[in-house]
Length: 215
Image 1: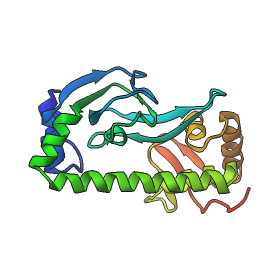
Image 2: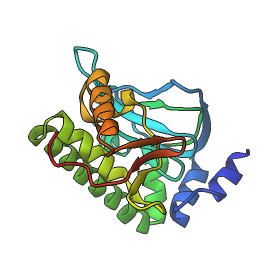
Image 3: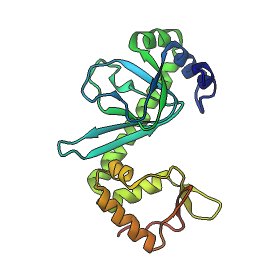
C-alpha cells in the first residue's frame, strides 16, 4: 500500500501526526532489522505506518529486557531529540514501514504547528510514567509478581466473563518484558494453566478468574 494511503488510515492519530508523517521519508524495514542501536548518536523520529517495532536493551549476560512494542500511529526515537545518545535498541518485530523525520524537519513542523509540541510532551510523560511503573514492578516484585502485572496490565474484559489478553505473547516475549528467563515463565504459565487461572486459546490468553496475589 502507498505511504500516503497508510498515513490516511493511521488509527487514533491526530491530524498533526499525519501531517508530520507526510514530511518524512518512507522507509521499509524487514523483520528483525535493527532501526536504532542503543548508545548511537541520531536525531530522527520514526512514525510507524505499518507493522510493529520493539524497544529493548541487552545485558552483558545476553538477557534482553523489552521496554515496549509499538504499532501504526505510534512513534519512537523522541527520547534522542535532545541530542543525547539513543536510550534503547529498536527492531522490527515484523515487516515495517515508517516515515523517518529528521530533527530539523520536526523543529520546523513544531514551529508551524505548536499544538503538536503538547502532543509530543504528553507522549513523553506517558512513557516516563510507564517506565517508572515498570521499574517499580521490577524492584518490588518477584518473577511471578511481574508476570501477573504483565498479564493484568494487558487484559481486557471479554464476552465469556473474566478477561482476555488479545495480543498473545510467547513465553520468550513475556520473559523479555519482565526480565526473567523463558524457562521460568514457561513453568509459571503451566502452573497457572493447571490451576485454572489461565486458558491458552487461539485468539489470546483467557483469564477466567483473578490471578492469585502470590504463587
